[in-house]
Length: 289
Ligand code: PLP
Image: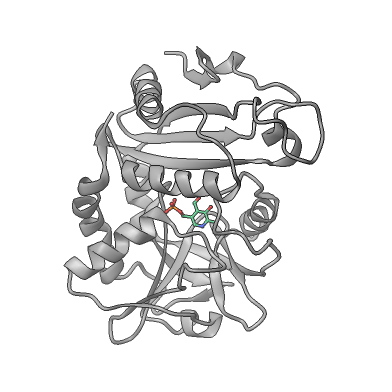
């Protein structure tokens, strides 16, 4: 079966899908995006992803490319046309196509919308959740508006490539005080010896991950204490457990940091419980394709 992409009003074969060379997303990274997980036909946390997209667009003074009702219809249509029951849907909005000039184009230039979907195998994610992954740490070198989910991801690309070259799955950005911010495409968490979940506050300096938000709700349902505070690389290395969250992976245990084992170097039970509870919690903010 061939894949179908949505590009500015048309459903086109994926291998022929293209944007204009003067799309501002291509030229200036002047665009925002969302990635949602699809599990058993449900677009997970869709309402929360739409809320964050709305925020990203308004922070950058960008208009919705189509009205929100039509937008949801198109997202579902792409998922259906690609027959994705388990996988991901990728949504990208750029400021549109205009003669290359740094300043915003005139208001008559419509923002551009691209949506793609692809299948993935839930068994692979489950296997990763069993074994856990390693992370490396890298100095923070991104701009200070990483709370906006923009397509400007070059520092993240370089950090994740470095992680891969060192046999790790993620790179954690660390601020100048040695405190962990977040991963290249995930939020970072630890579990303290007394079972408290700790993750950096999302008011500034990290992306407020949708999976992070739902995981906080899930933790509260389990009666686990959650502290939104800074934690150092050393505290993470000495934690009872550590894990990462993102729509692409949900919750994955971190079993080593810069080559040093976290606890006994195995996936921990609190992370596992939370991963299970996440599914129940996410039903509330998910929609069927
Ligand atoms: N932090 C960064 C830098 C990301 O790019 C992402 C996801 O792409 C996340 C965190 C996790 O966000 P979410 O849970 O919404 O996928």
